[in-house]
Length: 283
Ligand SMILES: CC(=O)CC(=O)SCCNC(=O)CCNC(=O)[C@H](O)C(C)(C)COP(=O)(O)OP(=O)(O)OC[C@H]1O[C@@H](n2cnc3c(N)ncnc32)[C@H](O)[C@@H]1OP(=O)(O)O
Ligand SMILES: NC(=O)C1=CN([C@@H]2O[C@H](COP(=O)(O)OP(=O)(O)OC[C@H]3O[C@@H](n4cnc5c(N)ncnc54)[C@H](OP(=O)(O)O)[C@@H]3O)[C@@H](O)[C@H]2O)C=CC1
Image (cartoon, rainbow, N blue to C red; front, top):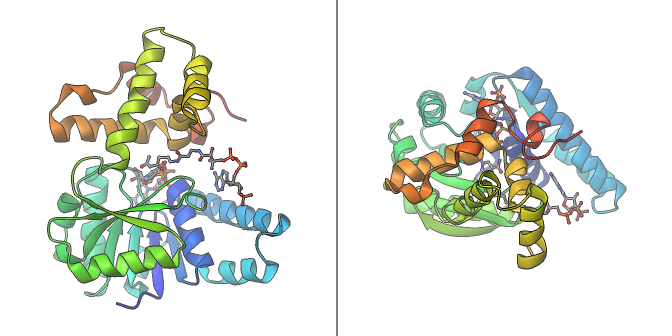
């Protein structure tokens, strides 16, 4: 299938990053969010990041303008009928995602592919909320989207081969590297990453070391670009908790139990960078 127009649903940190790379790569992009304020924030962030690329001499000013002219904000989900591909990037919650996919299924043209940027939830279950499970697929970008090379592509039980091939081709057009993964909780990325982050939170909870010391050990000792607690703040502590809950429930194994300290921070609304406070505080 020839993808020309992409609708990104959810203008948070992931959705705005995905919209940015799609517009830069030459696609017509519609960026949708239920919250108009979030949409303004997402659009402003894209403009800021592209302007910075121009300032650094990494992008021509006319390429930035052309990318921005291909990017349109949307507050009407019915715009999905214009899209060849919809990429969903709303909150990591199965009820929200299945409701949204059922709505998108009713609006989008029959040939439109519905992709989810979920970081852990079963693609097969999201697909079952639609009448086109063969056209539903996981397209898992990494944060920050403009920088990170990987897109984990997840095949649901019913995902058709031609749909996989289309998404693989789109991923390469975005300048990213696709890696194929089957549909199990957390896929590969978060099955491996998130238990490490959760363990770092346990180490803090048990008083093994300070947050700074835990981060320093992993940065200097293991060459990680960010320590695990800084990375958790960067991802969003709500998202980290939802991923751990998906692993815990999906495998039924207590080795994935979320740390009580993580739950406490999320209950307090300390979600990390996006709310100005998590393990660290931010301006
Ligand atoms: C939870 C999931 O489901 C899956 C996930 O995404 S897990 C999270 C995966 N991501 C990671 O692990 C990120 C780990 N951190 C890093 O790789 C690095 O710290 C980092 C790339 C974020 C920043 O790198 P750095 O070298 O410390 O900083 P800096 O030199 O300022 O930035 C490097 C580049 O990234 C860009 N950048 C940094 N943060 C950015 C952001 N939030 N958005 C967009 N671009 C960003 C900078 O503009 C800079 O670009 P240029 O090279 O074009 O100038
Ligand atoms: N953070 C990360 O590092 C990564 C996250 N992901 C996944 O990407 C998805 C989004 O995460 P992220 O961008 O970090 O989260 P954010 O909280 O930054 O953004 C989520 C956005 O979705 C909006 N939203 C919520 N419900 C709906 C809805 N029903 N319809 C439309 N928009 C809605 C939210 O609006 P409002 O704020 O008004 O509720 C918010 O703007 C999640 O599935 C997450 O697991 C994947 C890879 C990495």
